[in-house]
Image (cartoon, rainbow, N blue to C red):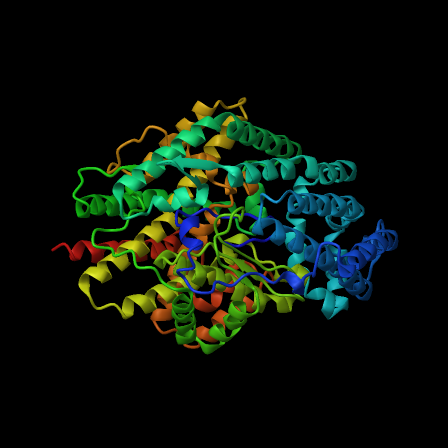
Length: 612
C-alpha cells in the first residue's frame, strides 16, 4: 500500500513474529533513516525547525491578502517558497512517522511523533490562508498569470485540484480552527487505535501472540490452527468492542459535522475530490464489482470448498492454502531475485530503479516487537527517496508484497522529478505501479511453473489476492458507506456496526460460507476505516486499471514501456483520463471495469477447466 499523508497500514493475514526471529529468511534489511535525520535531537532537525519558525511567518507576511494581485513571475517565486516549506515539513514528519512505525509501543517515539505533529500544526496555522485565497481568485486572473510564466504554468493542475474544494470551503476563521484542533481530534483517535492494536495480545495454547502472529495463522496449512486463530481474534475483538465502537462513532460523527458544514453531498465525496476522480466513475466501479460477485468470489469459493472436500467453507478457510501446498519458505535473497528478474524482464530501467532499495537501508523487512503490521511505501520528500516497510515471512504472498511496495517505490522515484506539489499521485492512480509490479512477478512465476498441481495452486493464490483486492475492498467500501449513512441518524451500538459488517461480508463472500459467531466483529482491525475513510476503493480501482493496462501490454501496444514510464513520471500532474489516453483506455467508460473483472473471471475459468 501507499503511505502518503498518514502512516496507514493495510493488514494482511501473513504475519508470524516467531518465524521472523529465527532468521530463516537470511539477512533481512533494516531502515537507515540517516538520509532524513541522524537523530531526533540532531542539529539538522533543529535547524529545519528554526527555518520553518522564521520562513512561515515571513511567507505569510509577504503573501497573505496579496495572492490575487500576483503576476506570473511573482507566482513562480511564491510557489517555490511554498514548496520549500512543504518539503521541510514533510521531511520532519516522514522521519518522526517512520521511527514511530518501527516500534509503535516505544513511548518516546510516540511522544516525538506527537510533539512534531503538534509543533508543525501550530507553525503551519499561518499557511491556512494559502489555499483559501487561491480558491477566491478570479479564473481570468489566474489564467493570465499562467500565461505569463512557464514555471508557474506547470502547476495549473495543482490549482485545478485545489479549487475543486472551492464550493465546500468554510470561512477563514473556521478553516484555521479545524486545522488547529486536528491534533486533538482525528489524529488523537488515530493514535489511540494504532497503539491499541499494537498492544493487543492473544493467548493460544498457553502462548501469547501478537496480532500479526494470529493473523498469519489464518493462512496456516493446519485447519485447527486457523480455527484457533479466528476464534481468538473474535474473542479479543468482542472484548474491545466498546472502545472500537467509540472510536468509529466519534470519527464518523466528526466527519458528518464537517461534511455538513462544508455541504458535501455524500460522506465519500471529499475522498473522491482528494482522489481526483469523479463520483460517477467510482460508482461505476462499485456497481460493476458488486454485479460480478457471483462470477468472481461466489464461484471461486465454491471451487475452493470442493477442493478442500467441504460442503461449506468456514471463515478461517478463506485464505487457507490449497491441499498439497508445501508452504515452502522463500529466503530473502531468492525473493529479491524473483522480483528483480520480473522487473528487468519488463524493462531493465525498472529493476535499476528498484536496486538501491535493497542495499541502502530503504527497506525494513523483518517482523519485530512493536513494529506496525502490514506493508507500505512512503515517498518522504522529493530530495530524499522513498522507504518501504514489510513484515517479511517468506511466503509467496510476501514476495508479491515486496513486488507491490517496490512498484510504489519506483513510481515515487520517477514522480519525484515533478517536485513536492506535483509528485503526489491521487490514491486511485497511485496503486497502478504497485499492482503492475505484482502482476509482472506473478506472470514470471506462472510462466516458470510447468507442474499442473503447482500451477493450479499459483492460479488460485492469484485469484484469491485479486478477490481480496477487488471484491473484498469494495465490500469494505460498502460497509463504510452504510456505517457513515447510519451514523447520521444517531450513535451506533457495537451490534449495529457488527450487523452491517456481517451483511456486507456475506454479500461478497457468497453462499459457500457458514456464519462464524464472532466474525461480525472483524471490522475492528481494519485501519483504513479509522485513518482514511473510503480509501479502500482505491485498491479495486488500481487493480481494475492494471488488469486493463496489462491486457494492452500483452496485446503488444507499440512503445508500451516508454508510455508506461512517462505515466509514472507524470506523478499528479495529469488527470487519470490524460494518463490512460496513450493506452487507449478510459476509466469513465462503464465497460472499462468489465475488462479488468473479465481477467479475474478468466483465471477462474482456467481453474474450472482443470477440474474437467
